[in-house]
Structure formats: C-alpha cells, structure tokens
Image 1 (cartoon, helix red, strand yellow):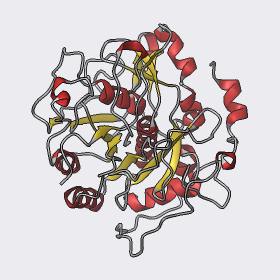
Image 2: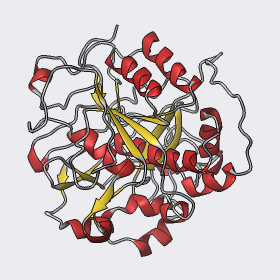
Image 3: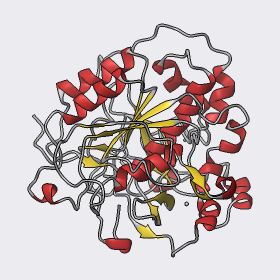
Image 4: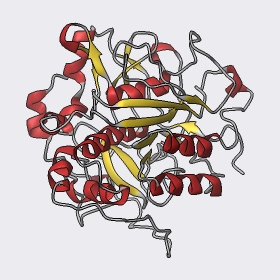
Length: 381
C-alpha cells in the first residue's frame, strides 16, 4: 500500500510572480494556446457540453476566470485547509484555469483563457497543498482517495479526468485499486489524462498514475518545442504539451508563471475536451490514438520517451476524428513490459515546427517529482 503522503501535486509548478502583470497583459503571455492551435480548434468547438474532472487540491469556484464553470465537487480527503486559508486549492485552481478558464471583464478579455473555455470543471479533492499543516504531519492524502476519486468522477458525469499529480518516489509502485479505478473509468467511456512526472533531472523514475494502461501520459515542452529538462522520460509518454512559463490563476486573485508536467497534463485534458465535444461518441482508446496520430513535431522515428508522439494538436485531432466511427475498444494490459528506447540525448529534441508562426502571434506563458512549493511569490510550483 502506498504510504500516505507519497502522492504529490504533479508539476512542481514553480510559482513565479507574473511581474505583477495586469490582467489584460496575461493573454499575451499565454503562448501555450497558440502552440496548441486553439484558435483553429475553436472554429469547431470551445468545449461546450464537456465536463473535465480535476483530481487535485480543490478548485476555487469563485475565481473570476472560472465563475460558473465549476460544478459541485467532492472532497475525498476530509481534513486539511479550507476555503479562506492560504494553503487551499492553489494547484487545483491553476489546473482548472488552464483547462477551462474563460477570463473576465468586458468581453472576458482579461485574465486566463483555458483550452476549452466553455467546458465545465468537476473538482475532486484527492491531495493537499504542500504548505498545508496536515502535510507536515506526513498526511498528504488519505489512503485510497485517488482510486475513490477516479470512480466518483466516472460516476458523476466526467467526460475527461485530469490528474496533474502522482507518485514517482523510489518506493512508487502500481496500486491495484488505482489501476482498477482507471480501467473502470475507461470502460465507462471516460478519457483519463495524467502528468508524466517531473523527475527528468532526478533519475526519470516511473510515475503513477501516468504509467497505468490506457492513461494518456503527458510530457512537458518549452516554447521552442524541446523537452523541458524536468520532464520525465519514460516508455509511457503519449504526447507532449506546454509546461514552462505557463500563466495560471490563483485563489489570491493574482496570476503567476508556473512550470511542470502538471500544466502539460491540464493542456491535454483541455484538448481532449475539445475533441470529445466535436466527436462525443468516440471511445477513449480512439481519442488516445487520435492524439498520437495527429501530434505535431514528431520525434525522429515517430516517438521517443521524451515527448511521446509529439505536440498535441486538438485542431488536427478534431479534423481526423470526423473520419472515424465509434468502436467498442477496450484498453488491454501489457503482455510484455515495454521499456522504450530509454532516455534520449538533449540534442535529439528538435525545435518545433510551430515556433515560427508562434513567435509572431505572442508577446513574451504529474505527477511531480517534488511537492508543490508555495513560498510566496518566488516559490516553485
């Protein structure tokens, strides 16, 4: 049984102040939206009708960028900080903003815009913030909370489950209850997404739940399409997404720049919401295959452990999805363990094909290997 406290917010989302950036300056720093070709995808859908379960530290449903987009959720922990306390819902609110933020102000032109701004967020609290006093007692989570959270989300309307969290400690191992919960969700037609891990500079340890069969595991890249140094390199990497200098909302009303595979996972969950909104009858296995087949800037050979099949492209996936017919596909366990090609050299990471047009369109925007570090506005997260 995994010891309580091993499950961490995925993405040492490094909390860096957005240089006290005004809300109306935030959009120009959201480079991830341009990288994912969201403007093209939004010509078809902005995610209306989709529900993304955010299994995390909680979500601030009163944040102006998320108001009316957050559904009543579930607290699987039952202890720790609550609304109004500083160590509450920071990581989860950040992930929800990346997924379904709609901005605020006149014309919603201020604040953070998510990948699927018309999707709904279903918050499921399964971990605590690193600064929560309960964590100092080595109680980061309650045993079984993640597995129960996955099942609850699947039973309560989730179309997509985002898990920007995980365990990549030296003692990390597959938990039968979590694996069964993932299979339960997939069988019910729910797409499951998780961060690949932030152990790229600490041994590339396997991360769970990213490594469970059927999960879309997401690696992180920078503005140039190269693997982020912290991003774990493992055989389970499915696709990659933006994970450095990501603009995120916080319950304190401020905006920060974050980094981590947690952010990358949230980008892909938003992308999946767009694909599902356009093609609601496709099975989870079909959607995973679509993301792999339509990813851009594929590594040499088509795939590697650093970036999976390449940068996720929801617009391309939506287009190709129209050619598919729903199939009764079911995720299968691995007959033989696949170790992949192993960590590849940094020089193997090529510059993304989208950097040219991206440079002209923007201004200057896990399982995690470490806890979310909340040390004020200069802390890492």
